Length: 137
Image (cartoon, rainbow, N blue to C red):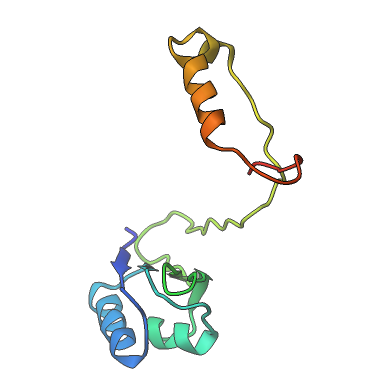
Protein backbone atom coordinates (compact mmCIF):
# COMPACT_ATOMS: atom_id res chain seq x y z
CA UNK A 1 0.00 0.00 0.00
CA UNK A 2 1.34 3.41 -0.97
CA UNK A 3 0.11 6.39 1.01
CA UNK A 4 -0.01 9.67 -0.93
CA UNK A 5 -0.54 13.11 0.60
CA UNK A 6 -1.70 15.83 -1.78
CA UNK A 7 -1.97 19.24 -0.14
CA UNK A 8 -2.64 22.77 -1.40
CA UNK A 9 -0.22 24.65 0.84
CA UNK A 10 -1.30 28.14 -0.30
CA UNK A 11 2.28 29.23 0.13
CA UNK A 12 5.04 27.20 1.74
CA UNK A 13 6.84 30.02 3.48
CA UNK A 14 8.88 28.97 6.51
CA UNK A 15 8.95 26.69 9.53
CA UNK A 16 5.31 26.70 10.70
CA UNK A 17 3.91 25.17 7.51
CA UNK A 18 6.96 22.90 7.08
CA UNK A 19 6.32 21.51 10.57
CA UNK A 20 2.58 21.07 9.92
CA UNK A 21 3.26 19.12 6.72
CA UNK A 22 5.96 17.06 8.42
CA UNK A 23 3.54 16.10 11.21
CA UNK A 24 1.05 14.87 8.60
CA UNK A 25 3.79 12.86 6.87
CA UNK A 26 4.84 11.21 10.14
CA UNK A 27 1.29 10.67 11.45
CA UNK A 28 0.05 8.97 8.28
CA UNK A 29 3.35 7.29 7.27
CA UNK A 30 3.23 8.99 3.87
CA UNK A 31 5.25 7.54 0.97
CA UNK A 32 4.66 10.41 -1.49
CA UNK A 33 3.79 14.02 -0.73
CA UNK A 34 2.68 16.48 -3.43
CA UNK A 35 2.44 20.10 -2.33
CA UNK A 36 0.63 22.48 -4.68
CA UNK A 37 0.66 26.28 -4.70
CA UNK A 38 3.99 26.46 -2.88
CA UNK A 39 4.58 29.98 -4.22
CA UNK A 40 8.33 29.32 -4.14
CA UNK A 41 10.71 29.73 -7.06
CA UNK A 42 13.18 27.14 -5.78
CA UNK A 43 13.85 24.45 -3.20
CA UNK A 44 17.04 22.97 -1.82
CA UNK A 45 18.03 19.82 0.04
CA UNK A 46 17.78 21.35 3.52
CA UNK A 47 14.21 22.61 2.96
CA UNK A 48 13.10 19.23 1.61
CA UNK A 49 14.76 17.38 4.50
CA UNK A 50 13.03 19.70 6.97
CA UNK A 51 9.65 18.92 5.38
CA UNK A 52 10.24 15.18 4.82
CA UNK A 53 12.04 14.59 8.11
CA UNK A 54 15.24 12.91 6.91
CA UNK A 55 17.50 12.44 3.90
CA UNK A 56 15.77 9.34 2.45
CA UNK A 57 13.35 11.36 0.35
CA UNK A 58 13.84 12.08 -3.35
CA UNK A 59 12.41 15.44 -4.36
CA UNK A 60 11.64 17.49 -7.44
CA UNK A 61 9.77 20.72 -7.97
CA UNK A 62 8.16 23.01 -10.50
CA UNK A 63 8.87 26.66 -9.65
CA UNK A 64 6.15 29.20 -9.08
CA UNK A 65 5.64 31.97 -11.60
CA UNK A 66 5.78 35.23 -9.67
CA UNK A 67 3.35 34.65 -6.78
CA UNK A 68 1.31 31.86 -8.38
CA UNK A 69 1.69 28.11 -8.60
CA UNK A 70 4.62 25.98 -7.62
CA UNK A 71 4.72 22.25 -7.00
CA UNK A 72 6.93 20.14 -4.74
CA UNK A 73 6.92 16.34 -4.70
CA UNK A 74 8.91 14.26 -2.22
CA UNK A 75 8.84 10.47 -2.16
CA UNK A 76 10.39 7.64 -0.19
CA UNK A 77 13.39 6.17 -2.00
CA UNK A 78 14.04 3.34 0.46
CA UNK A 79 11.40 0.68 -0.17
CA UNK A 80 10.69 -1.94 2.49
CA UNK A 81 10.25 -5.62 1.57
CA UNK A 82 8.85 -6.73 4.92
CA UNK A 83 5.19 -6.62 3.84
CA UNK A 84 5.36 -8.61 0.62
CA UNK A 85 7.45 -11.12 -1.29
CA UNK A 86 7.15 -8.93 -4.38
CA UNK A 87 10.14 -6.85 -5.41
CA UNK A 88 9.42 -3.16 -4.79
CA UNK A 89 10.15 -0.79 -7.64
CA UNK A 90 10.22 2.91 -8.36
CA UNK A 91 9.01 4.43 -11.61
CA UNK A 92 10.94 7.55 -12.52
CA UNK A 93 10.03 9.96 -15.30
CA UNK A 94 11.59 13.05 -16.75
CA UNK A 95 10.45 15.93 -18.93
CA UNK A 96 11.41 15.60 -22.58
CA UNK A 97 11.10 18.43 -25.08
CA UNK A 98 10.33 16.72 -28.36
CA UNK A 99 10.33 20.02 -30.24
CA UNK A 100 7.54 21.55 -32.28
CA UNK A 101 4.34 19.56 -32.70
CA UNK A 102 3.01 19.16 -36.25
CA UNK A 103 -0.39 20.68 -37.00
CA UNK A 104 -2.85 17.99 -38.03
CA UNK A 105 -6.39 17.96 -39.34
CA UNK A 106 -8.34 14.72 -39.24
CA UNK A 107 -10.55 13.95 -42.24
CA UNK A 108 -13.60 13.33 -40.08
CA UNK A 109 -13.35 16.88 -38.69
CA UNK A 110 -14.09 18.16 -42.19
CA UNK A 111 -17.32 16.12 -42.20
CA UNK A 112 -18.66 17.74 -39.02
CA UNK A 113 -21.43 20.29 -39.45
CA UNK A 114 -20.20 23.79 -38.63
CA UNK A 115 -16.50 22.87 -38.63
CA UNK A 116 -15.46 25.22 -41.44
CA UNK A 117 -17.44 28.10 -39.92
CA UNK A 118 -15.82 27.51 -36.52
CA UNK A 119 -12.31 27.47 -38.03
CA UNK A 120 -12.99 30.61 -40.08
CA UNK A 121 -14.23 32.50 -36.98
CA UNK A 122 -11.29 31.30 -34.88
CA UNK A 123 -8.77 32.44 -37.49
CA UNK A 124 -10.45 35.87 -37.75
CA UNK A 125 -10.27 36.37 -33.96
CA UNK A 126 -6.60 35.53 -33.52
CA UNK A 127 -4.64 37.84 -35.79
CA UNK A 128 -0.90 37.98 -35.12
CA UNK A 129 1.13 40.96 -36.22
CA UNK A 130 4.77 40.94 -37.22
CA UNK A 131 6.78 38.15 -38.75
CA UNK A 132 4.75 35.35 -40.34
CA UNK A 133 6.89 32.47 -39.06
CA UNK A 134 5.26 32.21 -35.64
CA UNK A 135 5.51 28.65 -34.33
CA UNK A 136 2.55 27.17 -32.47
CA UNK A 137 3.32 25.01 -29.44
